[in-house]
Image (cartoon, rainbow over the protein chains, first blue to last red):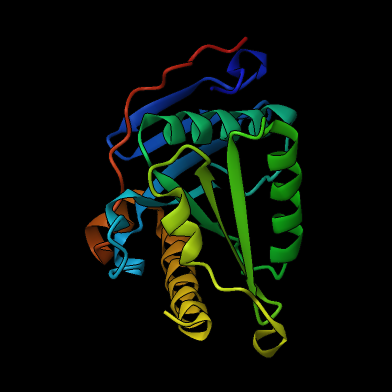
Amino acid sequence: MELNLQNLENHEYQRVNKDTYHFINEFGVKYEVYFADGKDYFPEMYFKHYLRVFGFRPISSTNLSFDKKIVQTIITILTDYLYQDDYIVMYVCDESDKKQSVRSRLFNLWFNKYNDDSFEKIDLVFEERTFVSAIISKTNTFYIDFKQNFPTLGDEYK
Amino acid sequence: MTNKEKYEMWKKAAEMMLADQKIIHKVGVERAKNEYGIKFAELREPRVPESK
């Protein structure tokens, strides 16, 4: 099962070195995309070598004008990476400008729009401030074990 | 592992991810790797590079 990436109109992106993709949006802003190694965050998990932390940032300008293709480029890169192996991709929403909840909702919209039910996204919110999510394919070898490592956020933890 | 232990594990991980993300977003991937020891996954060449 695979998402129909042919329907996505993404910006052309390039691997500029072994750990970075770059793309340029229609306003001329260059973005850097990366997948950090996630094993040090969960040293006890036996599948820690498959954990990644996804992120991207503008690098050529502080102009954050957004075009539709940025979303589709991010989705294309993310999906392509998830299909390469049993990777589990996590991300944490930037808190530097206090807009982390907006980012979380925005990414949720993207995920629901482009996911064809192949993937599951699991979200956690800590102290109504820190938003962290993980995306995993439902056919991932570690799907059940990974989900079992998630807490149920009851009232005592909010 | 209890639910509380899972919660603490994820909370600690999220804090570490945020701290690393701040560094990456401030100095970029290359310096984060070389100067701060943050590790990154190796990427393959794009499979769908063309604009449609």
